[in-house]
Image (cartoon, rainbow over all chains, first blue to last red; front, top):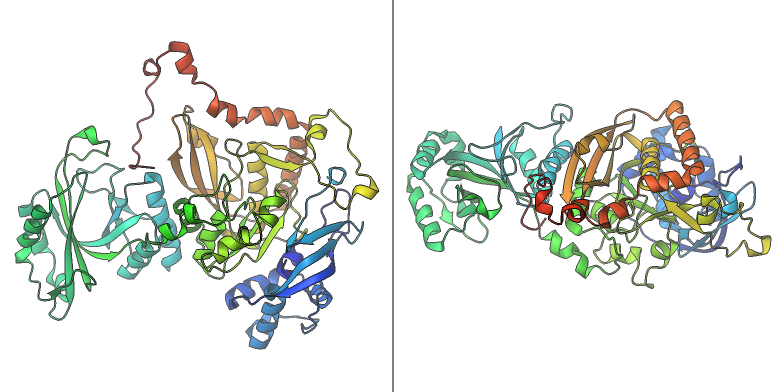
Length: 123
Length: 477
């Protein structure tokens, strides 16, 4: 699971109000090279919840992202795009879990696939 | 400028829709070309493979043809007629400045004779080619790799017994090829050589057509909420799009049939970039964070409509039927608990899909999906699902049996997802939950498709019933 996916997911358990971001439990992180596409990164940038993204990157071992990105002029910086690309698409949570911030419910991540299906009493 | 577009004689309903979609990719003034101008040649039927189409430039025509799956060729027509004499007159009157640049010394060329509905013998083909001495070819013939390809295309009324769309009289076209589909990618991607297959994997040709309807290109993000073995996303990835998929069945999406036979390996097999995300999620209760919207450029899918495979959703079958009280998972069993799922009716599934797409697609983004129809129903058009955020721009029917067919629907998001629409969707969602059994019975397509034909059982002879709808099909599809 890449951090792009993590940034999109929340705990959708019935009745929970604090759903995002999911805390990451790390067992195994892999680094895989991905094709760099600046247009894709620029399209994605405004959709990203930045604080959650920076925290998630730090949790899985990458701390080079700027804490604050106030304006989108940063998207012209090649250095920034490279870091953004690396954190968004090249770091994979292979084994671990995503944890609901309110209930502590673990959504396991095995073989890179987060299992977001709810139990019968959570829907 | 008008070009002749010759299609392959298959998937008849998909052909113009594909060209119109690709026009959106390659033409600059998108609004002006949102629907193209078409003209049927003299004596031809709407299902004929020959259609004139008006395109702004040769580059546009070439790009569209080369990216397409169903365009055999797009041609600049130098002349047409009902006989070779008329054809000659027509070619002679075509302006020299359009012809001479392609006839110059130092260029290479080739003439191919093609026909529709009849085979022309090799001898006859040669005779026809030799008849073009009135065109001042100065270049060299090169059959393998010519600079310019010329085509003679002939159709005639060969009698109506061959099952092809009727042609009322002879028509001959002579033209210069501008571009054509690269169908060599179909054998590469054909399902029988696919590593990991499921029972409802999407045929490669249709998957490419879906990716074209969705305008998959590099830099875009394409999502399939019923990803299965990834057969639709493979086609989108071939055209350079980033892909993301979800499925409710964890065995399919996570495990496959082992480390070298799973969704990932299907992308690896063709050297395509891996999906940016794969997850197990329920389309009925999607896990996207609130506030996330307008993130996908296209959503492409083949929803489970209960004929080959039935849909499932969270909740548990007994619970949804009301026969047991809500099941509480004991705390010590939570970690490895496998939740049971209930049946997911087509109406609810499509409702959820439209709601998800309305929220998650960018403005102008496309939702492309298959929708089943029973062929006995008249006025099929009235039954297609609708949503205030979407405009239906193409419907392409593929006949699957005498009873039912599936229609590929292409929708464009034309207005933003508002609070009111979200609230209406939430109320509908609750209605589906509370009246689970009623909704399940309403849309039971499986029994309609597989039960005996009522006409057959009533009369013992289907010919006494109403005539099947007249509709031409390609040779195989």
